[in-house]
Length: 89
Image (cartoon, helix red, strand yellow):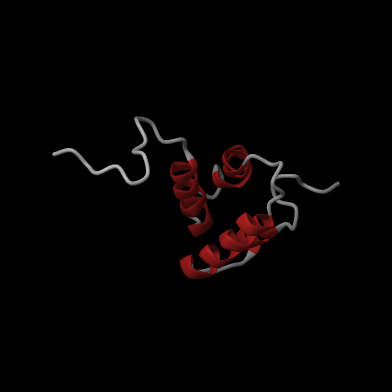
């Protein structure tokens, strides 16, 4: 049965590669993000993947990147500046 959060199995396989580097994990994560179907919520997928893989392998470079991705995909709070509007101050 295909995994909706990791349709190509890229994240799963990254955890199986012994000695994988940060750079290799970044490349895999970019490929994962680009191949994630648009109907799948990226933030929810990151959370699910962290729960599945990151708890037992907290020192793995992919775990660190998934956590960074969670932080970056979190909704931003506060007012958004209108395009063309200058900063006051």
